[in-house]
Image (cartoon, rainbow, N blue to C red; front, side):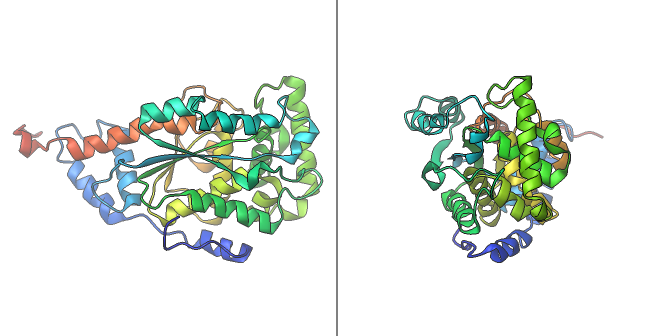
Length: 342
């Protein structure tokens, strides 16, 4: 965790932390823009790579951004709402997949290796399930703050680029509930197939989400209360990591639907709450395109992924590396003795 950031002791302190998020370094942005204009290419010819380089520099507070230390953190958690039959998979799979991550056998292990990133796996709340959100808040305030602090603690202060992912059987249901509460539309708009539901399963999932929304109706005007009542341990940890990265001058690549949903309360607590993040890809999970549009996030990749684990974020690492390499490694017109446009 960045040294200048302390764990919030209560919800009021967390709310203040979210409202006081530090801004980007626009001096670094101006320097990058000026340098980019001298490089041996037509202006704008590298498209979004040019924007990625500026983004990295803004949040690293330097006109020479770097990607020497890239971390992928996968937060794992379990959910009481699985008792409502929202997934065909047993909850034991969460712990089994965590073991698979640690043994190097998952997709994200291969992607991290190819992308040159360091993979960390965090079992939030020792994989104890949340309460069933259709009957009670998923987390009480103490548990929510503890899970959020686990995410903050997981962020290393020397990280250049942070990629976030998750693992949790049934967690598309709390993610969809979060989105419905934050942006409207009800369960039918946000419920997707998750890890293999058929049409009847998706309809049942939507009904479960609507029951949860009805049960917690009095809290649905407050983004933090929504995250606590409808979210999950690993979702709270992702939000904590996004906050810690902001205070630590670390740009963030978000993964799929669950990861984006977990971070989305920040967009309602601060007008630029997710400015230090980029959306790595748009998941095939039904609600992700709706969520990206609601947040104004444009995905870097469109690959039809719906795995989670940070897989899309890991695949986007080479794009950021390439953007920074072009900024810092290309010759200027003067250096290369190439004539500029008249």
